[in-house]
Image (cartoon, rainbow, N blue to C red; front, top):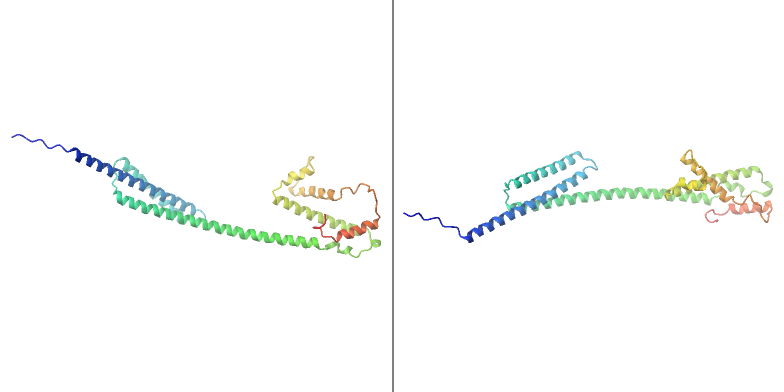
Length: 266
């Protein structure tokens, strides 16, 4: 009896099976990529949570977020091992669905952390605003006190009713001390404003007294500015005037200038 050879597979059936295998392989790879991207999103969310737990410091949150990152890295490592050994056993549809859920959960966690961080930053900025407003109020109060002192006669009120014939050296000494105190107060205010404007105070001092200027203490730089202010105010006093006035004239000028508002005088 003659044995009949088995029928050869038809080319159409073979090609169909080949296409099915290729499509299945493609679906598995797409599911693998979806799983990979979802894991990356989860790791990013874990690291964001880890950073958030650093400030303010929370050991429990740090351990939890660190463990979540480690677990996800282990899953990725296992996925890599299975891929290279051709041992992937994935249901493409289920894996894609789970990956989408994981992706959305990771994004939601990242958004929540971002919102918390923004809220914390807003709280810090609010605190900074409150502190700056307090400083502003203090500066305004200080300026008002300066304005009040400038507008008031202060120690010079003793000269309001003084007569020219009653002047004596004691009056000169009193006014000299007042002038020195006023000059020092002005210089302190000027240096403070220069520092607030980010001036180089030492360079400014050396610009006035450039020759071998050495300050034992940084606070001694104010003496250079005091000297400069006094020299500027008294410039020309040591030169003879073309028209000398009487002493009484200068006394009248002194009383007139004493009553002026320093802010309005030039």
